[in-house]
Length: 405
Ligand code: FES
Ligand SMILES: [Fe+2]
Image 1 (cartoon, helix red, strand yellow):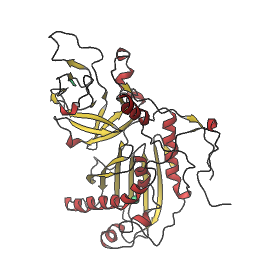
Image 2 (spheres, rainbow, N blue to C red):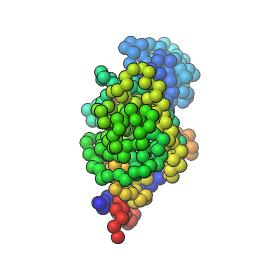
Image 3 (cartoon, protein in one colour):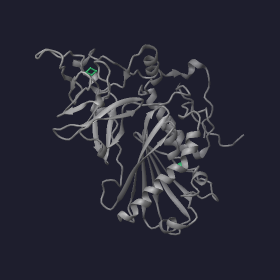
Image 4 (cartoon, rainbow, N blue to C red):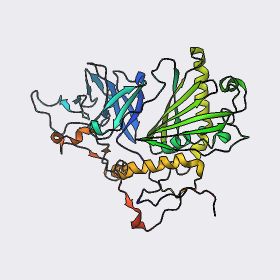
């Protein structure tokens, strides 16, 4: 297979931090009335639970008065009060009280911070980091087997010193299984990967691959039921959620969902939920949790060794083969979002901060409302400009090398 020539190119080393998706910023259980600071997409957020209906609020963490951290403040009813001079912000981000001003003084129009849409699902807090209106937002993915009768799940966290795109690719890359996962579900004696299809749906990719089953021993002997193959359904919900769905011989399923949060360009926080429809006694939870952690631990050192820490967007920058079809499809989709203007220019935001002391933030939907036009103290992070490949005059090399000469 030879790739078609592409029109535009993203810089090789630019990590693709994308706005306009729902990101898992916290476990639901960890957000209470006391605010918490969460770093995601190289920006800090203040999360808290408001009093009136218990809903989670996500504000930009930076108070626009003197830039103190709002997550150090106090929740009052539905509002968050800055710890420094006590400015009080509502859940929509608008400031409603400036204590130092005489009573009755109007609050300046620009006294507001970004407030991002929030939903809770699957025990996770999902924050829409972006500025699209509600009807244009990509949906929160449907994660089958969670919140369903007949299934039991365990959850946990795992962090990586690697960009999320490397972590995501690793999660849907099964050709490494015989090498890194010999101790869990890989079979070192049979590394051949039969050809597989990549199925594309809006904002998602999936492939079904059949691997040689691991040598039967211990728990795997029971779960695999003596089968010689292991069928895996790999699912990828753009840009950072993956699912490894194992179907065993006797109809048992195990699904390992990973939400791989880009904390910043080189740090990823993976929250996992592993769901199973067998051995549903709580007694199985410890083993399930250990197995999930073991699989991620087996990947850790190798993923952290990859250079650069984010996947290159130039498809010719690394040599791919047929077994990489799913990750090539992922890279192409990532690039399509960049071409839509959803790639955050974090390098520019960092430069503005370091050279000019200016903080830039991901725009929230409220910035698009007519009544808030021009009423923002802090600039939004601009989209990363995409250069047409023609301008560089460099033809793209084939993306997949099938070995033919
Ligand atoms: S810095 Fe927040 S009120 Fe002054
Ligand atoms: Fe792996």
